[in-house]
Length: 515
Image (cartoon, rainbow, N blue to C red; front, side, top):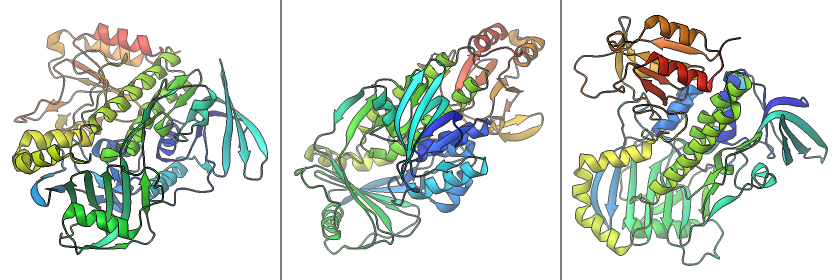
């Protein structure tokens, strides 16, 4: 490794790999170091939701993920031995309507292949042992497996190495929160012989007092059995055996004759949890992402997904700072820190109300048995669950980078026409630039087209301008009701306005003019 890099990313999990890919797509010189000798050998996380699939699309590897995963289209819910209904997972307004069953080892392998394709690599068997930051950069002390030390200087360092982050601890950033009491998760990949039919797109949830059992098909065959339950004996730490898992499945699914055969390779796990968020995600020239920045119980499977979304948020901002496009690099990167920290808190809060995966009390179980059939037939309830799980409604409205009507929200997708060509709105977006959408009535609202060209042409930041028209008869409005909508590289709206002057003020607040 060279003794100087633009960015050193510590940790080659999904977040670190995704961040490195995003940086390489901007031409940033990035090093990824990982103390393990190779990628994950364990299945771990098992689902990628719709918004994270959009992230992977921007990073150039969604198609490969979809080819190796299973699209999850529907869920069937049972409570106390009674089927109470079901719903679909599908969401509109995105090119990826269904979540994907794919395990973390496969995700990391495919991200690693994509990183190599964009000119990056992982330096395995290399542990970061200390980090120091200064006004102009950072130093990372590394140690190889043979014990030989060396130091790499960099402009920025990002800790993506997990709960015991060297970066976070070295800088003294508090990891705020506490242990989640009376909750454990037991998991096993297995083929089941039982009374419930198999379908490659069907997930089951079985609710029993103190037990929430999810059963989801996996690409390698069989199912992922994941059970959130109360924790009567925290001293038990070993992974569940077949007998313990079989008994849990028999009780929750009310099938005393169930038989489980573990898959090859095997995956079994018992976990307890901390709910924690770093006090800050930036300290000088150091940043935190993924599990180094936030941790919670994997209810809803959002840990990996939130890490991918954070990397997607950070990579373009860090590249903007390094390319000299940002008027104030620290202020821009602080928007990552505040946005991602608030996102983690939102996800943590929402998952505390996930009635499908939290172990139900007697009252909750009775409620699901009584009103569950009505709820699952309710379009409102089904849409709420889909919206919560998909992450498509996650926004950055509170961000300093958001200004105007619906600013901070993810730009909805849907069919439009541009210069006589029909396409989807998100086809106009690109991760390597900003996008300015000009409404058909912009001139009537006083927007000077010459002023627009001057504003966007004078900015060092890449901006492309489009004039989309919504297709007639479309029932859902997909754009803010403003003449000008400026969209960030990560598909969130930065600014919506009727004023070219306000657009100019916004751009010059955050970005430099061409030299």
